[in-house]
Image 1 (spheres, helix red, strand yellow):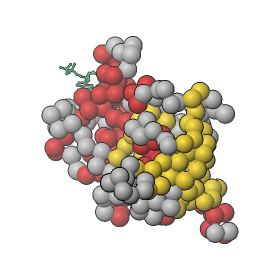
Image 2: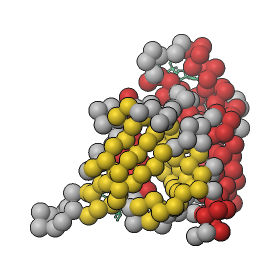
Image 3: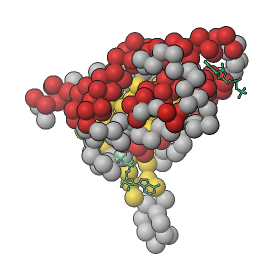
Length: 234
Ligand code: ADP
Ligand code: ADP
């Protein structure tokens, strides 16, 4: 299987005290992501979406089950070697760096490190992609909420991650801005051909972003398909 394949992944956080049983949060999750597509996991708060993204990124180890990339087991591959990027709700920018240096951050981490000329060209390309052409020298503190969100997306995409994980990236924004940016994110991910897994509890947002939707509840993925089909056959 090309790209990410998740098979029978379960996870439980350690209990708060030894007298308590561990609480299962992911329950035999199976999921494969089609390369170049945007998959949305839609589910209520607390159903395990963030936990699943942390297991995929390597921040948490699954209790049971396997994750593979192009058929290769990921269990021994540390977070920074997976080639994945994450975008969070409070995708905080580095406040002591201007926009250009924020977007260049992931490029500085690449080995071999691209030349300065290449980095600057990629930063410019990314800023153009998120409709912030020429913003390189702006201080982060002068950006609006929507602009900061675009810079965070440009920063995540700059090193061309093989998978982008987005954890409710728009939930701190007001509705109008949220839906506007959701449509932009879809266009930007398609333009870059990025494979992405996007989690949200907001169905309208899911509809704007997704090629495919998985419906998640209580640690399980219940159904998967086009949103229109899922609505017709809930
Ligand atoms: P979602 O992202 O869908 O809101 P989460 O993955 O954040 O769901 O949480 C799933 C469940 O795991 C919730 O019941 C939550 O309270 C619990 N949980 C999340 N993080 C921890 C943690 N660090 N320790 C213990 N329980 C946690
Ligand atoms: P440092 O002093 O931390 O090394 P640099 O000035 O070398 O900072 O910049 C760090 C990174 O940010 C480099 O990859 C550089 O290409 C990028 N960068 C800095 N300013 C800009 C800018 N105005 N436009 C595009 N990229 C920039």
